Figure 1 (cartoon, rainbow, N blue to C red):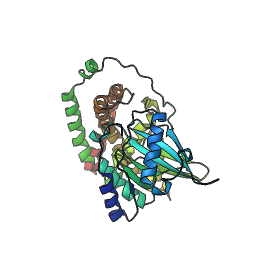
Figure 2 (cartoon, rainbow, N blue to C red):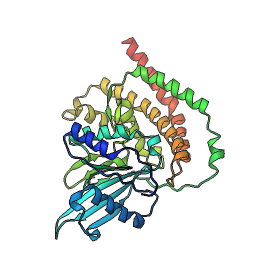
Figure 3 (cartoon, rainbow, N blue to C red):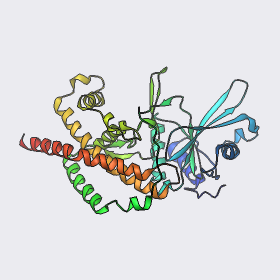
Length: 337
């Protein structure tokens, strides 16, 4: 359907999930071309729903309402409302993976994360899988948004711009930063790794907060997950005047380390996490800079990924001296204690 290449065999994945997860995951072999317009895509989405959920197979097409959910520059998110009676509706979310994203995201690892995250009661429930996407329950909440969240880009001469990137310099920066990060010995934890505002949903009426989109979730250094989160305060426009200051970071650390008694967190623990987070924020800039380069070549989505590379890399260079100096001073103090 639409010439899409399947990322996996949905039937095999669903069978494995049933064995490992003790829950029924509905499969479909169908794929949907994400380049289609919503009106073109709607009948294909309805057909997918009927094929995946057999209880809906005899429903009239008029019982289905398909809407695109805003947000996301890697995938397309669709909200499908199914009218089952006069006042009974069921709502699901279809995550349609962007073309070539499997070159950047390990989709099989993502499913492993979703399986355990769902079992632990976090995020949306995994319901189904198809040729190039998954189906999850709908979360009744809205994502957070940075105060500067809209970008306008010029196409430019991408190849000429791309050739100005020094990969030798990038390699040296990555190596030097890795050596310094290793010295900090940040604990390794299961991490989200992409906590930008669009992946945080909140329902004020229920006082509930949800973390969504676990594409990049894996074990990682504590400092990276927190530092990356702080870097995302800047939004897609990369307005780094929004990066949290020391007092704001300490407030976060207190509630992160000891939510029941935040004001009892030792000063040394706050300082340790402050150094970790800000050094790993540099690593975050390098990671997403390179992500932007790859996406600029692989992704058909209308987003100036190449410009995003330069925005993140420029901020890395701007903050490097200050944060590296702080980390070296901290390590020297620890050695002398």
